[in-house]
Structure formats: C-alpha cells, structure tokens
Length: 139
Image (cartoon, rainbow, N blue to C red):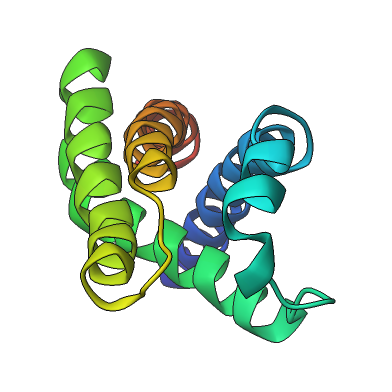
C-alpha cells in the first residue's frame, strides 16, 4: 500500500514538473522564438507537429530530469538543483543542436545558441519546480 502511494506521488511529481516545463516551452515555441524558427529553419519544419514524437520527448525528458537531477537532490539547496538542471538542459539541447550544426547544410548557429540558452534556462526552472513538488509530495 505504501509503495503504491509513493508511486502515485512520484507520478504526481512527474506530471507537475511536466506541466511546468510544457508551459515554459509553449511560451518559448509559441511566442518568443516562433518567428526565429520560421525564419531560420522554416525550410526544415514539418507542416504539422508529429505529436507522438513530441509527447515521447517531453515525457522522457522530464523522467530523465527527475531521475538524474531532481530526486537525488530534492533535499539540497534549490540553487544547486536548478544549477544541475541547467547543466542537464544544456547537455541535452546541445546533443540535438550541435549534431544539427555538424551535419545539416543550412542549420544556423543563431538557432543553436538560442536553443542552448533556452534549454539551460527552462530546465533549470523545471528542476527547481520539480524539487519543490518532490519535497512537498515525497517522503
């Protein structure tokens, strides 16, 4: 019974952290960087979002953030968790963007730099929020 309760609480931490990151990313993708992406990489964008891949990314990304950053540091100072989240975000976003920069003919460095900064920032915020949710819900 206790294990099931903890699993539900862990799932709640995942969902809350996921919603936090989704809200941040929606503002970034829908408002802040939308025109930059259209201008710089519009020729690469699919006509419609492939939602299955998008959902898989977000669910896995937040699971990785919780497993590798938040849960091991939920009792650490929030600034440490946020800093480790920023590092996690930088590395994860760099994997995508630097691979594109290395392999695609027309991948602009401006997109890479913006994405790296955004990945670090948004993931730091999500990690700090996830830490708060974990401290609230998990023993």
